[in-house]
Length: 126
Image (cartoon, rainbow, N blue to C red):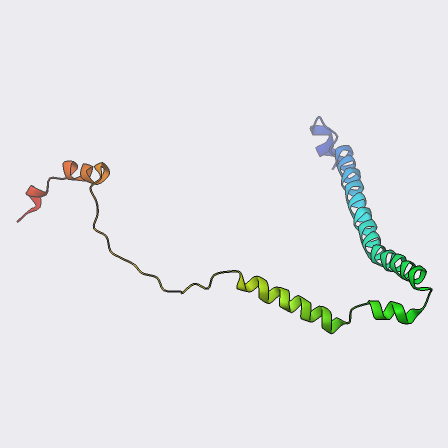
C-alpha cells in the first residue's frame, strides 16, 4: 500500500478520508432531515385535532356530546365521497371503441416521385 502512495504524487489515503467524511456528513444530514420530517408530520395532525377540540369546547361549553354530534360519521363521509366520484366520472364523454380504418391511395408528392427517376423500370420488364 505504501508503494502506491509513494508512486502517485497525490496522497490517495488522505483524499479517501476527506471523501468519506464528506459522504458521511451528507448521509447524516439526509437521515436527520427525514427523521425531522417524520416527527413533524406525525405531530401536526395531533396538534390540529387538539386545537379543534379546544375550540369546540369553548364554543359549546365543554360538553363532549355536542362535539360528537358536530362530527360526521364515517358512513356519511363515504357516501359523499362516492357521490363526488360518480359525478366526476359522468363528466367525461362515453365514447364507442370502434375504429374505422380507410385505405387511402397515395397522393402525389415530390418525395415519392424521386424514386422513379432513380430506378429505370423499363429495363426490369421481361
